[in-house]
Length: 53
Image (cartoon, rainbow, N blue to C red; front, side, top):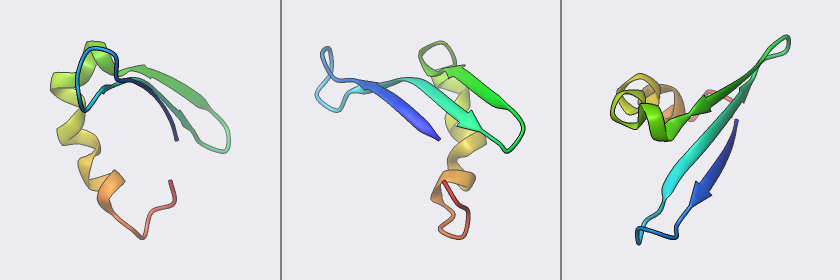
């Protein structure tokens, strides 16, 4: 997982782009476009310390 972040317009900033790779595929996610929908779906995976990120 790799995140591209922009903090020019807000104090906390915004994640603009997320890149996710598996052993066989790479995915690029436009998090600005999906920001209202992406959090609930990825929150569990990103907060689980047993998952490699």
